[in-house]
Length: 505
Image 1 (cartoon, rainbow, N blue to C red):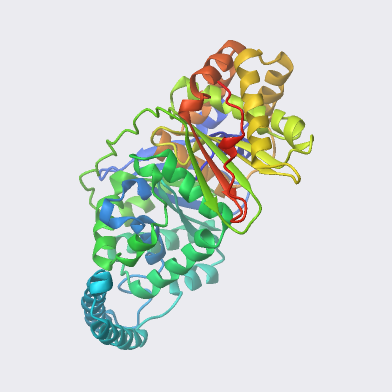
Image 2: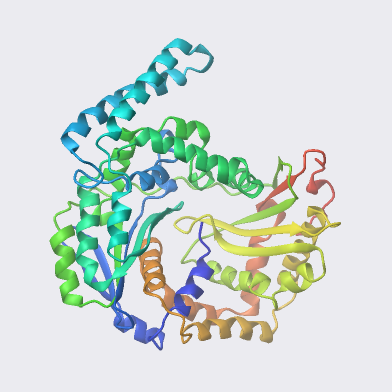
């Protein structure tokens, strides 16, 4: 999930050839098509390449209770091809796909019975499913999408799913933009979610590798679930194991139809392009995709936390610490202040966490992030730390709270303000550009903040922050009753950090 401040600074760092905020505002061209598809463009002739990005407001936060993990699963499936790509004969393949769906559904329902399941029936269905999958292989052309893009000089052909959105990325020669438009519009119009159960097994393995066997992944999953008891931000992007086990092609197709509509997306194209020609090209390939009734926004609001929550995860690994404080999301002014606080605490070797915790030998690392796990809804100010032996998570936790207390009672010195603001200003002129970086940030802020111009207002608001604002915000959010604490402990050492850590208010 994303760090808003990090993304903003990265965005500003990549403004090669754009000397000021006003220059950026003048060069971004916006166009909205009749089907409500929003297109943002920047023409740049620094290289003969183009980065077209597509972002859909289709993240794990948008899933229903019986489809947890479907946004991430669908991202995988959309690389499988269409009625013409990834298949030798779709008409023949289609018959087998229907039979795979029928058998797969029956198998899932039988397995879902648990101890009451018919073991012989499960074995019979597993054999039948495997047989149909073998038949399907005769018609499948594996990896054809990737092969086409690679043959035409692309890089970065990928996708990613977060709590808030799913984004599809690529960078390719500018004379191949029409190829991209043809391939991606075909993917939106004629996607075939083939090899669903094969890919579902791959996602199960991905979860095992990234979460179940990874101490940090395991701790974070339990920590975020404790922090959000009502809001879907508490659900894992990849889904719980029982969720993944019940996903099917029908659920994925329904999610695709609702959430992958032009009026629920943002398209960004940055690079060596002709603006009017690009608008005509997008109209040609994407203009006939119908808009859909917009999916409902999440109306569940996480209740105000009324007491500290603490969780422990036992794992055979070195200890870790996670702390989260509930806070409002963008564009609340306090969110800007917390961006500043995060920079003061953990940006670089002159930051307070580094000087007072890491350099003092208390922790191997100590970091803060404003805006976890997403930005569409109220989120967390997130802090993590890893103790340096012989220190423990108790020591790290106490050191972190001491730094937060200073923010409440001691005005930030002018020198620290200047350091952060200097970083912001320098970001506008650094010559570290990429079309892809620009496209990603425009897509993110237009799609999630609601307007890519948020980046310009962010800089202005950072300059409005005063030491009094920092003290006020620190006192408001950094309280014991508003925090969730997660600790990774070894199985042989199950002493809770909360048993020893001093309470700070």
